[in-house]
Length: 451
Ligand code: NAD
Image (cartoon, rainbow, N blue to C red; front, top):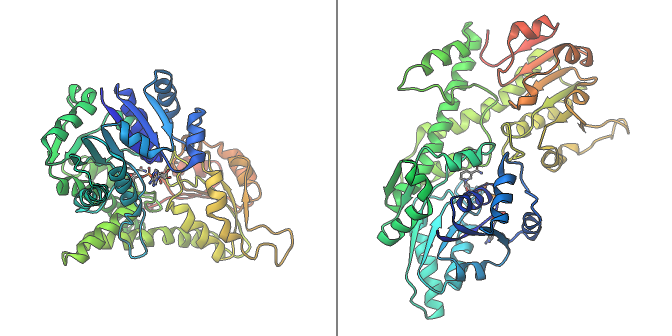
């Protein structure tokens, strides 16, 4: 059993902390956001992540998991400190390391004995070395010489299945040169080690690169199939048949070959931008990733064009958008394609009726700017209406645009859909429905990459 402090209790920190406690460790999760910590102390999970509440509850009850805002006390009393703070994009596309630096420096200001500092945030290659330097500077300022090791331990969990992913990873990457730290990390992940999860041991730089390379590759794969889908539409091919057949090739693999409105979320967009930034700075440009970023932006806007082609002019049209989070089973709307598509539709004069099973609160503030000028022509005219449920969203709309593959959106009552819409247009941007089924209900079907 290890004593672990986790700095940052967001999507990654809360799941990592709870699951590490489930592995039998004693974990204290720290966040500077008092509201978040207060909620967690009351057993309320501030994010939508299936199954996380049960893991938190079980471990709090067993006395293995606590939540606090006191970073300093946590560092003093825990031998292992995970950094799981955000690394958002800076204006130039590079990763903004201010939160990682603050966490590292605060660790250096507080540690009292040998500490393993584990970087779980996704960070540019070379950040581990900077973390060492930041901690050394703080120790120097204190006139202390305390031994510590820095480990890069990137996280590969997917929001929506984060608990499962953390407890059943394809691999655990441990990047460090410290032999003691390596042993301690194996102890932290002992239950996975015993389950024969592959452990990949590297230096700091390789571990940092692995995370960026993995995300960039997945983003490229999605964009590749999106571009093939776009071409399929022009040549009369069906991308679903194409994806199925090429995916059977073991060298290609069937995952991440689902065309759609473009990728979003808190990772792929910012991580691809950061990697491109690193490549350019070192004069080793990553052309394929740069093209992917541009292709993904185009894909999101292409969806607006697709809707306009199907509906005719969008001016004054009411459109229902269902599924606003960047994917199913999360409330995360960071860089969700829904944001770009909603903006594009409103710019072309449409009014929106919106609904998502978990992201309504997020959608309200993230889309607020689109309300500008609302009601100027007609006092009662709303540009955005946040619906009560999926069918309320459809009432009086000219089209249904399905953006995310939530389970409860996979099985809509199509005759009810038809009766609620004022024109029978169904844009299935995730290719969930079968054309025949939708057409049999009297609706016009528009998928992605289908003839
Ligand atoms: P998040 O924004 O949800 O959470 C970050 C948390 O850190 C916030 O609650 C913030 O208040 C807290 N924080 C920041 N500075 C702090 C400090 N000095 N002391 C205490 N708390 C502090 O971010 P996230 O989505 O959990 O991502 C965290 C990192 O993990 C990022 O680098 C991200 O790229 C990476 N990652 C994310 C995912 C994912 O699916 N979200 C998956 C793998 C890796």
